[in-house]
Length: 226
Ligand SMILES: Cc1cc2nc3c(=O)[nH]c(=O)nc-3n(C[C@H](O)[C@H](O)[C@H](O)COP(=O)(O)O)c2cc1C
Image (cartoon, rainbow, N blue to C red; front, side, top):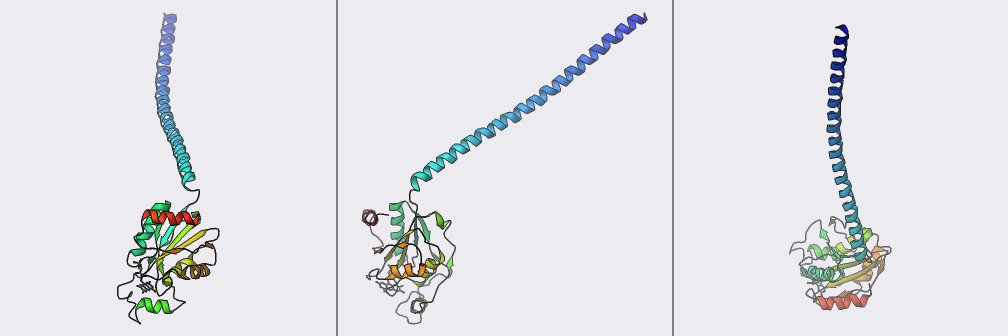
């Protein structure tokens, strides 16, 4: 009888052990399933990494194609004429457009060249005047060629252009001045800005009409060989 009880106990113990092992197995299964979810999400992550790296490669390839020579078209325009020309130059060259924005905008009274006490008359008569610029070019170093545009004010570039020229390091860059005017040529405005900048290879540049056509601008850009 005792032997029978011992045998029954042994069988019961074995059964309990089997159930426990089974439970543990189920637990492992669930944790495996957790692991496999996590491994799926890791694989998702690695897929996204790889597609990200594909994207990065793609981006690199794109920028390689477009960055053989990277162009910036920086301009100041008080009444919109130079802005039109700058936009056409940016379209033709595929360059980035940057507007030189005065910290203190010019009012129409400021622009009155018939008034000897207007802001622009005072600024243009003072060679040390450097009107402040609001904001800055992002990552200026990335550009190889910089078109610099402005209206002619009193046969020269507006003083704010001198602020711009003195604010950046143009070393290693080709700089192309361009301007619009009521009729005056570019004169020595470009070389004056080059002297103020002190660095960069400044080309002669050109005076063009604010509504110059894309083909006209394209012909000019090609003639520069930049
Ligand atoms: C203060 C001031 C001075 C100017 N001086 C000249 C000048 O010396 N010669 C000229 O041909 N045009 C002159 N202009 C006309 C501008 O150069 C011309 O209208 C230019 O296209 C305006 O460009 P924006 O609209 O981009 O400011 C002057 C305009 C202003 C407001």
